[in-house]
Image (cartoon, rainbow, N blue to C red; front, side):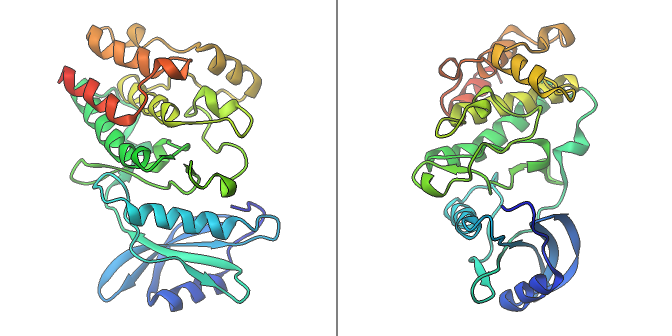
Length: 282
């Protein structure tokens, strides 16, 4: 989305009217996109509103793609869209839609202590199950970070915010460049379009989350020097999980070696293959 535009309260009010909801509170505000807690008929939902900037006319199409993707997937491990996309203004100056309200917290608040392998294995498998639905639809998430994974009160993991996902069948409106969060990207994120992340890359990012859970540190940390980080990412220079978790078995370590290989073709080709490998150990 167009990062130089702020979402106005007037647009939020119009979105609430259009979707028949009432605003309860702010969840997150990020310049061109705002997320609000809303209510309708006694049930609560997440309202997402974007403001369409003049410098990014594709924003409306990308938002429609996100909603369409979420509506097409039925999985407990992918957040659910609960409305169609509603255009705001005439001509459109924004768009809005509803998503299910997930209890629990983002993974961000759960990292810091070393997890057991069974706990990390469950997290990785359930994220992969959500990603597998996207991969079956030929969609790549591209921004799999702790902030985009929810751990529900039940312990279930849910993948969120595929708004910058690349749909291989809709490449003409894919956002230019490769969104991601430093520390949580694959070597393919460094490539120039039309090359870039694939399903192999999502697998790489799941392994990053798994290693952070097990060790408290991502395998290729970002310390502020982008050139240094990019070099280590390209070369595959990473923190060896063996050095910090000597209790992990060879089979577990082999999964991380494969998923974090700097050459995509040496990794799992699809998230479901990673699930099968982990299940083979458990």
